Length: 121
Image (cartoon, rainbow, N blue to C red; front, side, top):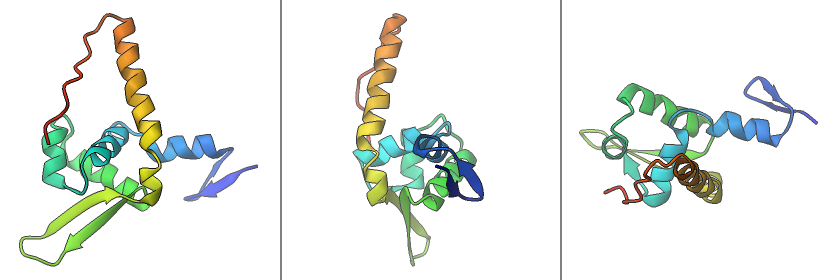
């Protein structure tokens, strides 16, 4: 069985899923939107200060194109844009939570202190 999506061929759903949510910042973006939604770009930048604006916008566009998030533009001046998870994006909650929990466990194996203090929104 092969899956054709965006002019690419994937051998199974796992490959397709990794293509959609793979990316340096996509899991972090989804995690942020799971904990607070909707968010504006500036709010995400405050939560994820390590990512530059250009990369954040690029990752948001890819997630929007894949229908994982929705982007709402309000007709006001200055422009107001908000992002939130779509219905299919909300279904990533157990996946993202498991990945984050695994990351904490992995860090503890190597004796790294895991900062479990919640991020301030």
